[in-house]
Length: 184
Length: 150
Image 1 (cartoon, helix red, strand yellow):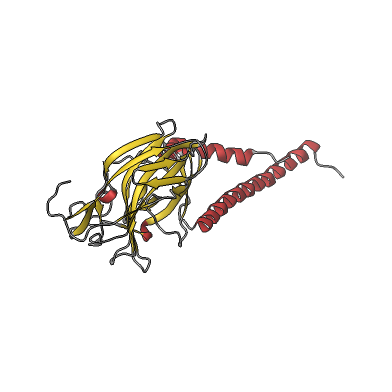
Image 2: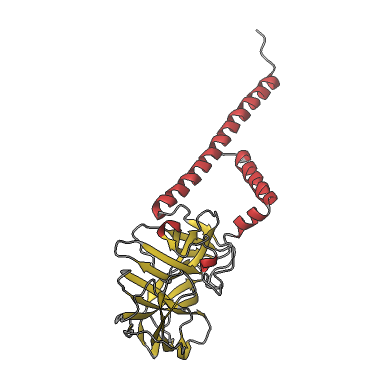
């Protein structure tokens, strides 16, 4: 009988192979994203903090921390809050976490604790930042205690925030790289 | 050391306000950890190695009252950058921040402990809090001062 033309066969093969390879690349990409999410969730569990890595947004803790520095937090339940510690907290009703130092602590026998914070670089304490009528912070306001730090690394996040076009460009490049990368 | 009853920086109730004056003489040598602290002389043995950007020093008063089992109030702080003169001669220092108690627990309180601690800020890495090994106990009198001669 007659055989199919060889170049038509080859083309068909190529088309089939490309589809399979595309699915493979997409799965690869999904795996990378899932792994990253798992690592992040794992950090949340290990540190006890809802946000184990934060970027410093203001200069209120200079010269120790500058805008763009990265902070690593822990939030162990049994860690007492003590004067001198650097805490990251959120004011009730606001989204932005603040990194400042604890300067006053009053703890009752039953473990109830209230404390006051102040940025190293600020003249006054944080009472002006708290909610209307709120004079103290409590354990529930704490996102974590700063345990370690890396300078500059967080600048990428700030740039992506301030220039969304940069963020999309970066995501597009990353996506293209992963999808087009050929597995040998 | 004196005492007065005032309130204006925070809650609107009357709270005890303490006044402390102190001298700090600090001498930072090169060596390993360790510290001797008396009200007139502090000997900070250095931790200024290549990875230390600055020390955040703070003098805190710790005490216990009827209201609260544990109170800590930072009275004074100082940022010491690497390269700064490691010798501090500070006499008759007034506390930088108001020493308000949460309540009236300073009157007659015999056991207020002052300690000097510092936060080591590295160029990159862990942020330890170190407390000096010495401390000074400071008693407050049983009566209030009626004149404000601060």
